[in-house]
Length: 240
Image 1 (cartoon, rainbow, N blue to C red):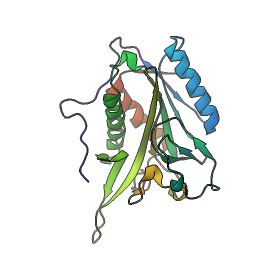
Image 2: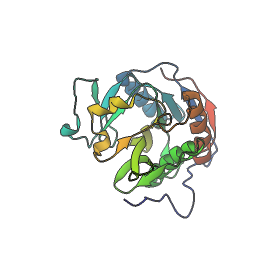
Image 3: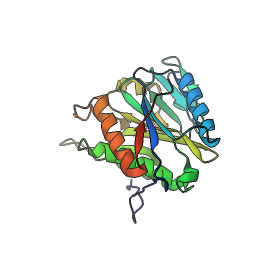
Image 4: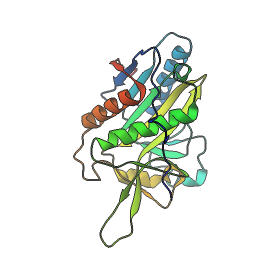
């Protein structure tokens, strides 16, 4: 499978012309999925109406599965293992749980170019940039959503595993949902689904790759990368 290149003419940057910073919030405790979605939707409505600014919200969830708008029933292999929630985001089934950093990205694309494809490229580039801070080469693949790493073991064929997922939705040009990066989740929890509908490849994490990375380290790399791609941030209170 060939690499899917990011924009070859320029790094996919999406700063606001007015330079206004996005809020940057981190929840200290796992946030239940329904409450997180309700808070995210409320913030999106406030951004649309001009009552609140943009926000990137970093959190962890308790163990759960979500079904995106393209999810196939047969890809839910163990419906009784964890709670299952339908999601408005694009994509198929995915897992969220402790040790995985979820970043909900609520940005106003009315102020950032109204280009959905370029926005997705910028999110992908953001994750790849963060991984590079730990000497991990994240890659894209045609026909497969998310960020992948190639693993080589002497005597075995190369293997590709997914390290980050991406699923977004826009409402009146304001984004929500976002990305999830596997820092140190229990990878066995992914066995209850076919992650993102892909059966021939596995999942991995920074710790699984031998990187002694904690959540604070991952957050710092994500924050630095976000500022390179999207512009400045300012510390903000987490919705929950």
